[in-house]
Amino acid sequence: MRTIGVIAGERVTVGVVEGNRLTGEIRRSQPPPDLPVEQYYQQLRGEIAEVGAGGEIEAIGVGVPGIVRGGIIEESPNVHRLKGLNLGAALSVDFPSTSILILNDADAVAAGIAATRGELGKIIRVWTLGTGVGFGRYPRLDGVWEAGHCVVTLDPKERFCGCSGVGHLEGILGHRAMRRRFMDLEPDEIFEQAKTGDERCRNFANLWHRALAAATASSIHLSGPGKFYLTGPSAKFVETALLEVFLQEMVKMSPLQGSYFEVTPTPDEIAIVGAAVNVGAGA
Ligand SMILES: [Zn+2]
View 1 (cartoon, rainbow, N blue to C red):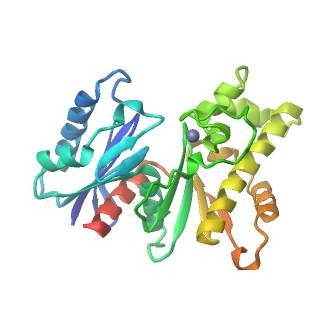
View 2: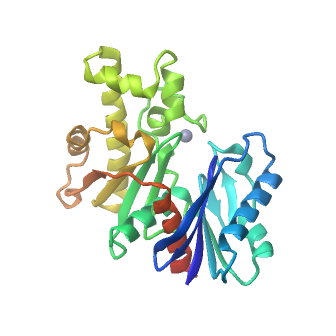
């Protein structure tokens, strides 16, 4: 089965996937930030057609940042122009008789990790730590799953989230949120100075890990223990041992013990393969 895997956010990456593997080159582009959504879609459509040329395309899986239902991007707090785009319907018109699935990009990452590690028979969860914070699960379940916006603090001053909600995980962990909180330091500098003992930075690094542990604990209390992958540009800041200590403080019931974390890099090809794996599984 020849499937096109796509991740469409601020950047667009497209590749052909066969047998859960990428075949050929990944096509990457960065549409200008002010490009209207109609032209953004036309560019996306053109790239899918170009990458897929030279053979039949059986399915297209597109991962996007935000809430997706029935092929419609209902919300995308960090890539505003995508909000309201009925990507599923548009692609169905342009690529008739092709299976099409629009899914959350973090779910694509989770499926990609499962496929490339031979873990397709297991349940895995993943936090994607970047501009925003995504939560992905494989196998994918229908629903909203905006766990990056779960409330991890009742402090009314915590209002740095991209969606403007108060107390959200992304408001502490998101790259954009960290820059808004520390007007004088970049996230790299915050975590460097935390290591050398700067009190303000160390306190923030602890809060950052506690928040991630809290959101993970919430997932464990709802869906049970298991393996949590941590990925994305900000995963380099994770101190796994510290995260585990905080998680142990938060999860005490014995049937819920036994979760663990793994930091893993996810190059573009992982999410592309994952988007394709999901449409294959759902088609
Ligand atoms: Zn939020």
